[in-house]
Image 1 (cartoon, rainbow, N blue to C red):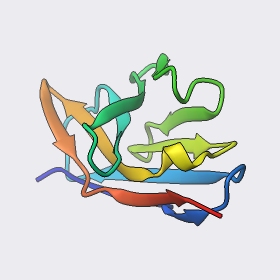
Image 2: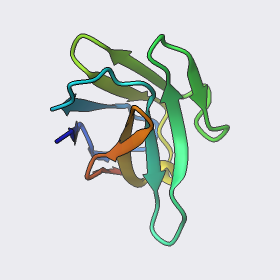
Image 3: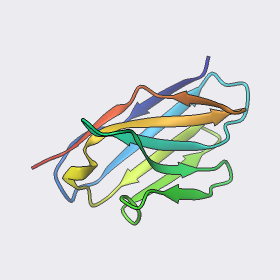
Length: 115
């Protein structure tokens, strides 16, 4: 079965940077869209960024200009580089991949931005 494993989360001070990685494995088919969602305590899960197989990107207004999503198709891996982090960015970040119309999710990685 398809498995997505996130890494790179942790504690960082405001203004700092962090890079998340998500590696997909176990799929005999090509991965279509990939992306990152995030969910803060008491709030709904929201889309942060997406990227198509050919590299077209989309960002939420709240992260535009600070976050950058990229992917390596040969490694089936998607990345999220986060700069100028704010306390409001604190959340569990989830990786998603779409394969033949089906969505697959990672278990999430915690990002905490605090002094």
